[in-house]
Length: 303
Image (cartoon, rainbow, N blue to C red):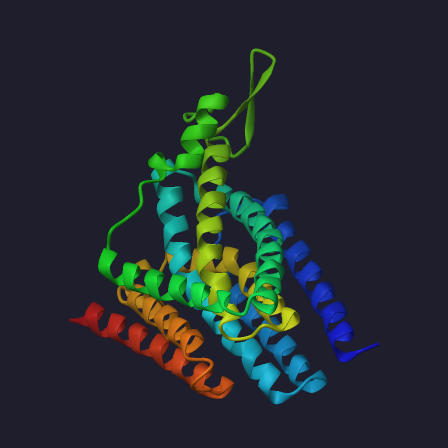
C-alpha cells in the first residue's frame, strides 16, 4: 500500500471512532455539557488531530505535515467564529442546553459529507482550470473585508431564507420544546422547533463551507491533507461550541483576527505564481494573527 492509502485508512478509522464516541455522549446521554467537560473534550480532539498530523509527517514529509497543521488551524479558527453564530441561533429559538448537542451532532455529520463534496470538487476544478484559484482568492479577500466592515452586525435566524421556504411547505410547531425533532398531534407527526433550528444551522454551515474550503485549498491541494485537517476540526465543533458559550465575552476581536487570516490566505493565493510563501511561514503568520486577536480581546476585557 502507498503512504497515502495507509493514511486514508488511519484517518477514516480515527474519524469514525471519534464520531461514534461523540454520538454516544450527545444523543444517547442528553445532558447540559459543563465548561470543564467541553474543555476536556476540546483537548482530546486537538490531541488526536495533532497525533494524526505527526503520522502524516512520518509517512509523507515535513512540508505535508506543516500544511496539515496550517489547514487545521485555519479551519479551527474559522469554526470558532462560526460557533458564535450557532450560539445566537440556539438563543434565538430558546433551545435548552441539554437538547443542543442533538442538533450539533447532526450538523457535524452533514458537514463531513458537505466538505467531502466541496473539497474534492474544488481540487478537481483547480487541477482542470488553474485560473479558478483567483476566484477562490477573491472570495476569501471579499469575505475577510466584509467581516471587518460588518463589525458586530448580527444575523436574524428568523429571516433565514431556507427556513421561510420550508415553513411554507410544512407546518412547524415553534412552541413545543421537548427536544424531539417531531411531535405527535392528532395521530400526525409534526416538525418541532428543533427542525427549524436544524434548518438554520445547516444552511449557515453551507455558507461557512464557501469560506473555509477556499481557505484550506489556498494552503494545500493534497486531498488527504485538506480533507483530514478539515474533518478533524469539524468533529470537535460540538465540544468547542460549549466551551466558547462560556467564554463569549473574551473573544471580542477574534472575528477581526479570522478576517485578517482570510485576507492573508487570499493574497497568498493571488501571489502564488510570483511569490512562494513556505508552509512554515504561513503557519507562523496565522498563529501570530490568532494570538494577537486573542491577546487584544483579553486586554480589552480587562480595561
